[in-house]
Length: 155
Image (cartoon, rainbow, N blue to C red):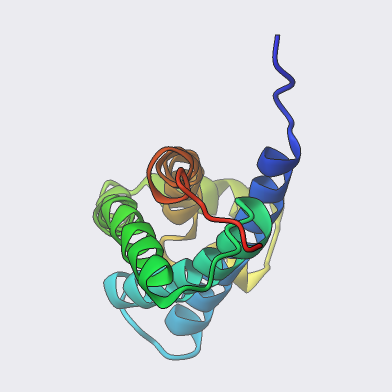
């Protein structure tokens, strides 16, 4: 049986967590400080996170070392397109879960526990968390099987 936690998967998880921090952090800033709607905050936080993810995945997760312009463009377009698919899922599903009052379960729970941290009461944050877990798995599969499958290594 193959070892599940390879260096690649561990690095993906580490940078996946950091990408998620970028996504959730920017989302929280856009909602709480910039007073953006859930939709726009989610969309812009997605762009920030995908840009961060491409750079970290290329360099440290999948060890794609080629900087040939033609290769990088092909790789980046493939990466952003695959993330576009999961981005659409996220952009549609987060507001959809919010509309179903999914987050109210958590708001009520934390309110009853006396937790007053404002970030825990950010509109849509629990919907975003649940959807993010699904997206992380899909993104790994797309990156592994499509984007970085033919990585070139510099000589």
